[in-house]
Length: 349
Image 1 (cartoon, helix red, strand yellow):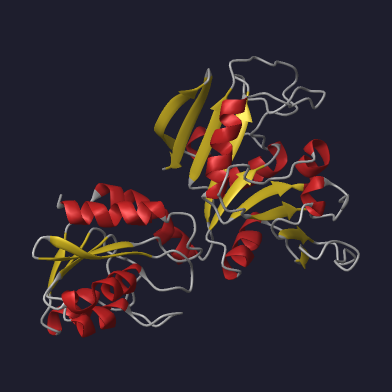
Image 2 (cartoon, one colour):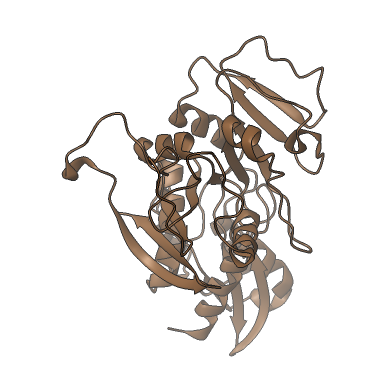
């Protein structure tokens, strides 16, 4: 593949996880074999990658080629359509790595009618990067990654509730990296009560995602670390109409819904600009997510331990025994060893 298109994809990857409900996009403007402009969409509502690259190129954009990781947009949103900017800049050729199946109008035709050559060079890396975004946009819910840390026999804790620490410090550092790449971290009220987590990213320079707590009954202790830590907002989803915010920190927002189902909560988060959610919770919430069919990526960290017991804290539990053909199906994307713990990344089939 053309190296300039690879550069555009690399720029997009650098911005993954920080563009909300918009896609991460990279763009490179090239004239006479020399890069004259670079751009990446860095934040929802800000300039798109193509606009940044063209602004950097300035007059050199006339007659140049622009390489983009994703087909240029054609709609008015927070910013004008990128195809308009490309035409106005005098670009002679557009090369992109992935078609945007969510576009309402044909960008290729608009550019071609303006006398611009358009070339679609499909790239597997770009496809992998945007597949979940397309699904999320069409369903109007965030991209969901579910993480569990378990023993070899699938336990998140002993029958007595002891869970610190099943996995090792190396896994914790890896989890921090994943947290930083998502707009929000979600957990359940039971995990907050049992573990008193902060759900922050303890890595230098990384952003702190919004924290989300599922508390259907509203039974919460607002003196716990998650609520007293003012680093980022905390959204509490509940069906308890008596739960109020005025008694608690200014960073806490209580969202009362008639139905606190997984799908309803995810749709509300998406409307709030949350494009990706990282779920870290106990068996109850974990099982609800797996049964919801909303999980695109499942990450399991296996510690080399066998806990045994009755399985009270088995990470996936259902009331009914389902036929094999009705169970959630995943395929292994990749695996690695982190300080004697096994990390397995699975993708929804």
